[in-house]
Image (tube, rainbow, N blue to C red; front, side, top):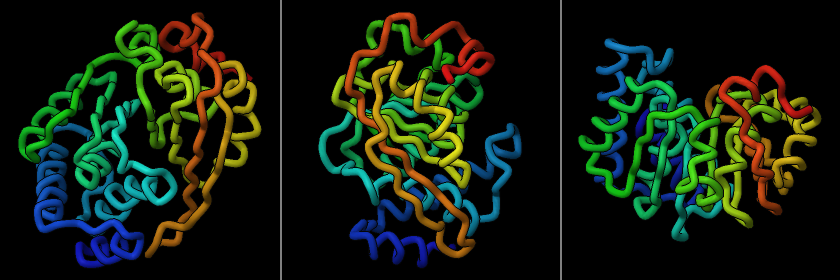
Length: 238
């Protein structure tokens, strides 16, 4: 997907990018590739692939969820900033917090934010399990996103404790979503969530399957969740 296709395909979805926003994506790509030579941020470095598999793929969440209203968003395990930084570029009014366990990635994101001229972005070096019990963050976000971090039964325990009651958890998944939903239903219920919608589509050009799970937060998460670091992965709620 070249830049022109990227802009045109988003326009088909009524997402109209300005010259400034296109410049921000161009800068994002260049900084990503530059820093990727020093540290492992992504295996994908070809420009057209980055525009498709990182930028466009991140923004697909906006095809099915309204990001135009005031939203306090937390992105768990965002790595090089996906999906939250592309969403922030497209919807500048978003207030974005990214939590990541690797400080080198946080340093990259701080640099990226400065270069892109972003405001209302916060980068926190922490594990999701310990971040989720911190009083100033627990159940404080309107929306929590995660892309390709862990299977749903594990991911729910990392993300749902951060979502305020009546907020949303958006999980961006590849082709294994149906299996994950089957094994993740108990975790969703225990943690106060409910699968409201699943949107399945194919990524253009390469025609690979994508799924966006929209999970609403119906009840407060019990205080014992999230458990200690590593426990959700070793002993998921299933």
